[in-house]
Amino acid sequence: MLGGNGERDPSYPLRVPAWRDVPHLVHGFLGRAHGLPPGPFTEADVRANLQAAGETPKRILIALQVHGTRVLGPEEFDPGPTFPTADAIVTASADVILTIRTADCVPILLLAPRARAIAAIHAGWRGTTVGIIAKTIQALDGRYAARPHEIQAAIGPAIGPCCYEFGAEHLQEFRTAFGAKVETTWYPFSPHAPSEASRVHLDLRAVVRLALTTAGVPLDAITVLGPCTADSPTDLHSYRRDGAKAGRQLSYIGWRQ
Image (cartoon, rainbow, N blue to C red; front, side):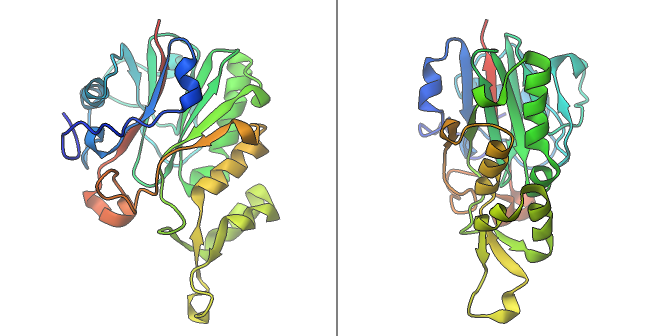
């Protein structure tokens, strides 16, 4: 099954230029043309879209995303139609593709070349504040000895501050997680209208970048790819823009044998 308009988009997948030379690595942020429509989906649906984008996956790992901090490895996935709940997947195994789905939240792919370890993270605002990024980096280190300073990160298309109006009542959760420096990632919704003080424009990808560097990833090892999802109706799905009619982008990373 192909999502979106069902046509191949030559602009996608978006890929990190420097990662193209990593032997046996596959990765990408897919657009609307290879996304999933709204509603339930199967592994076969994900596989079909990856194949339509030019990949030939052997084993695909899929989790039900719940905005939490659970990180899983391949050994924790049982065969069958039921997906486990998690918001990040890690591996160092060959012939495994890790996938996540987003429609405004931030898709993150991690690569540790020396350890040959990788991760895929689904990072909404809540998962980011409760530590999904740090937990994933800890899992890469604990399971595969991938040190944080060796990790490279790619941040894919997500809702931008131009379109992300966010409730100010939640900002203290960002301060608690990251300190006062996180305040640079938002600005007033309307500086000339005091009645709008309860809203801000939030740069969620900037928060994610801060979370990555706080966890030990070098700033110059972080690549940000793609536009705002809500501001790109032709190319990308957006829940904030389309509501329940929104599909989901697929992002993936894996190793070929």
